[in-house]
Image (cartoon, rainbow, N blue to C red):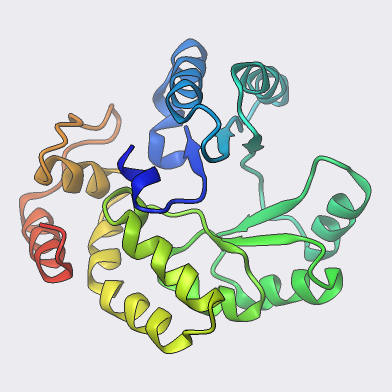
Length: 228
């Protein structure tokens, strides 16, 4: 509800930040089903259904569609820009890519080859504005779990032509983004949510709780960003 109220355009359920690697298939679908029921069509829901096993990914994707998801997000190894463009052009239900490699040259190549035909989303919170400048459509974000309005506004201001306002949000968020990635995702973001009183518990093994010194840095970054 807070995400929707803050202007988030789409909920991604059971991505890496959702600890999908440590959930059973039954739990995985339960979460997707619950999110779809709560959102109830107000904004799109994209379900993370990727797996190292192709059969599992196919089965999870079919179940996610049945649960009401509007799309699926599937993890992959690095795919060449030419292949991504070809897939989006010739396969009706492949429409875009979460570009998290940090390689702007690859992202630019995708957008150049496709002429905007492929929807490109930043997968890195510290690279949102540069990705939008190349023609990206937004961000699949970790930051938005704790700062949904600011993450939404970073993109919205850019699309309204307020590049300076967008840039200011990006740069102000950098210390918090760094703190959110000071340990393996989603260890820090779960710590941040707990600091906000969300009581989301500890990460599942093999992930562990955040180191105290990192948690202090995170807490200060949250305070400086105005969310704590």
